[in-house]
Image (cartoon, rainbow, N blue to C red; front, side, top):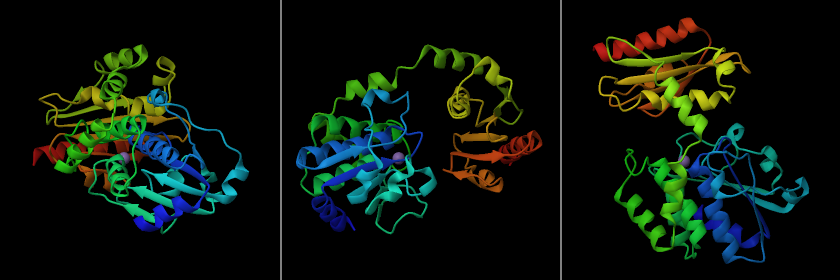
Length: 311
Ligand SMILES: [Mn+2]
């Protein structure tokens, strides 16, 4: 499949890069790193990047705006996602051919042209290796983008799938001119509103006798902070992290648009993904989530976490 992909890259004059919506730095970094490398190697080709933008990671650069007709003769490469409904800009379906490069476990409902390695902590690591194996020269700004994806998806080289290869690959990107100061400066800087929200949410969470911390954010929270629901649900769960007495922490936020409650669950050591699955959710062993339909169910989830820590 790798050979087939690079053969197609050679053949097509137009290549459009997609990735998942609400992008993180692995999604944006893989898309941009691949695009800029291909642009340098094939200056005569039309290479585009599309999708929604995150204000958090906007420092990496803008997306392209393209017309629908461009897809008719285009090769689309999707990175960091394999599932159709999560791809940003659904015009990828208009492409002549589609390939996916991913590191998530779920099977693809888009195409059989999939290069996936779930043992890679970041898809940026996988793409860097593919490009170097194929003899591509990765230009410095592409290296910076790929480096950004590796360090964020690996949690600065701490998460499970981080291997010696992860660091060696990141090292090669530094050798190629990746600007680590630029990435770190941007990811360690947040907006004043974000900091003020974290400070406030940090005073709001409750704890149980067994070491569970939780936040319940009902709809009135959006009168205080009129932000996107994900800014609270995913953005504020970390205010309960890194506290000795708290072993499992979770954040429940009412999603007005869909009339559901978004649950984000985190644990330091004990696996909790089975509890997320029990409520129709999923994710990683120590970082997962589920969509809940009532505050009674929220209390049941908290009770399940209590039980997990009692045993
Ligand atoms: Mn990723």
